[in-house]
Length: 387
Image (cartoon, rainbow, N blue to C red; front, top):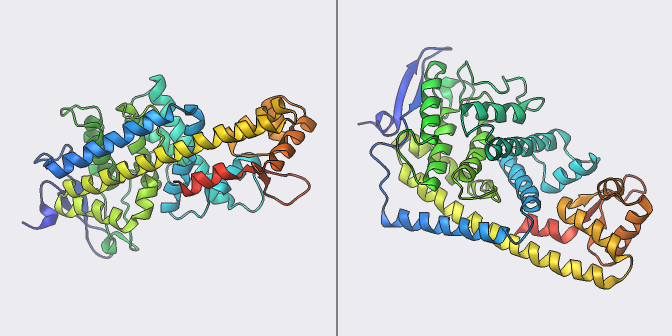
């Protein structure tokens, strides 16, 4: 049997259109049939990934979780958007959020900022019980992600009604053609049912990995599918309570292994190789969770040491500690923003920042007399470079 006709992978659907016909691909329903072959190796990888997530969850409890989430959500947003071709960095995003700093690639940064907003939107819906992880929520996330941004003219918050494709100039020469519009809702209905365990329970880590591939294969939106698909992994892990918050930036692994990532996705479609995908994905979960845990420990040690340095400095320690605490939360701060958020006067804030400059905790980034921005240098370096 030809690989493309494998019932485990899905089925090609011949379509007429353009100057020639083409074959769109409809994925087989989840869960896979035959069921995932859980070999000793796959079981070991799943246990290692779960252990790494548990370690990350434990370490994250030693730092204010909301502050950690602020940092890691932004790192994931930058990395996921870079996979799609944006040029903005974590520094760009933080400077933009602090003051819309000149010199940042504004269009790219706004796109990354929309990813942050979409992830927070999803977390709020799930954690408050407003909505479960569902097709309705995915449409909401898409609306937040692309409205007024790149792809904002491509039906934000709505599933597509036309054929899309990946690579090439038309479906006939594309690298991959997702399901035609009339096959979209049955495939999405199955995905939603799978997320809700309507076909029986699936181990949480497997569920997140399988759902990601299925969503990417269905490609239900005209734009933003990659970012929503990667965001879906984090939301499944939170829904399944493997993490209380997504202190997790799996897009780093996908970005570092981009060719292998796309190959593993495609082998599911051509050969039904779910096991190969899970192997690749679980290695990534364990790797990134361990790195995130080590990064969290580095940040905790940095915060403890620098807080003691501020106290020992002796110059207006109380107000300096207040401003230092804001830098721990925001990383990049303007004096005006610091005065607004702390309730301190602008002269008091400036004195506090000067004290931290003397300690080489923060540094000025613009070189200007007006509109200055200050960055918590070592915290940003740790977030960028990791352990």
